Image (tube, rainbow, N blue to C red; front, side):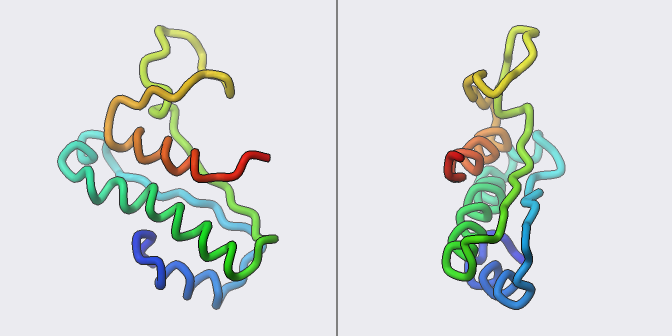
Length: 107
């Protein structure tokens, strides 16, 4: 499945009809995200959007878990990040991961 291809995502979710989905998309290297920022954003942020749209169209009871990254917080000045720590992404990978997180509905 190609996360950036909406029809591919829809087809897989529709055929499998899972109860939950763990979204793990991400570059294998933060450095590579600087070389391929468009691919990074498409695979992570657009991939999440396509997944959420498929779930919305097929079965809103499917649970979606987005696996994030500490990279979303950027430089925390040595402090531990919490749920209240603002996102300050410093690279394309972190920006895409933060975008994907912000696409999720608040619960």
